[in-house]
Length: 351
Image (tube, rainbow, N blue to C red; front, side, top):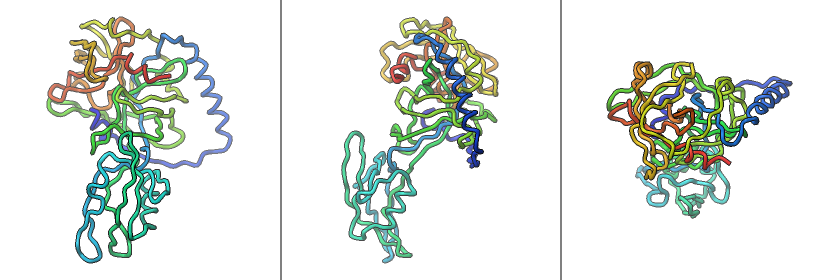
C-alpha cells in the first residue's frame, strides 16, 4: 500500500479569499475543542479511523532521475549523469537556496554556461557537484534532471492524544518512483470526503477514492514527521467523528492475543468498527510496521471493499477495549489479509 496509497485521490484545488473577521471565530472553536481533548490522561488515546487528505513538501527538490537533452547542435547530452542520483535533494544552485521546482527553474534560467554548482543532500551527507548545462533552442539551458517537490494523498488517522498530537498511516510515505522515504520540510492534513471504493481482488489491491480540497478552510493540522512508523503532527481542528469517540487505554504488544479484534475505519462516510482476526503476533518483527498479521472477517466490510484497501492505512486495531496497533499493508495476493504495526512503535514518535 505504501507505494500506491496516493494514486487514487481525486484532487480539487480551490482558492478562496478569506473573509475578514472569521479568524476570531475559528480560533475560539479550536480552543473549545482543545479543552475537551486536554482532559484525556497520558495512558489514554482517542482512537481514529477518520480518513484525511495529506499534502507534503519535500526538503529541497527531490531528484527522480536524469535524461538526455537535445542541444542546439542537434546532438543529445546527459549532463547530470552519474553526478546526481535518484533520491538526492537539491538544496542550492550556485549558492541560492531552492525550495521547489519553480525556484529551481528560475535559477537554471540564470546559469553560467560554463557550469553550475548544485548543493545536494544524499542520505545523511551533504555534497556539491558541478554540472555544465546544455544550451538548447531559444537560448535556454537545461540540466536534464527530473525532479519532484511535493506529494499528495489520502490516509487514515490512528489516534489523537491529550495534547492534540496525532499519529496516522502506520507506515511512511515513500516516493513512487525511487521507493525511498520522503524527506519533508512541511506538511498539512486536510478534510476529505470518500466518494467511491474500488474493491480489492486477489492480485490487485483496491482503493478509496476521495475528494480533497486543498485550501485554508479545510486544514485540520500540520505534519511534523514522516517516518517508517507513520506520519505525526498536531491537529488544530478536530473532526466531529473523533470528538464523539471514547478514549481507550493503550495495549502493549505483550498483551495482544491471536484471535478476535476489530478495526475502526470510515469507508462509506460513517465511522464503524469491523471484525478481524489476528493470526500472528511477532514480538521481534524485522520491519517496524509489520508486527501484526490480521485477516478481515467482517462480512459487511468484505462486501464493500474486499478486505483491506489503499487509504485504510492507519485504521486503529482494537482488542479487549484497548488500542493495540494500526493497519499498514495489504497482502497483494489476498486482499482480506494484511499487516499491522504495534501502537507502541507509533507512540515513540509522539512527544
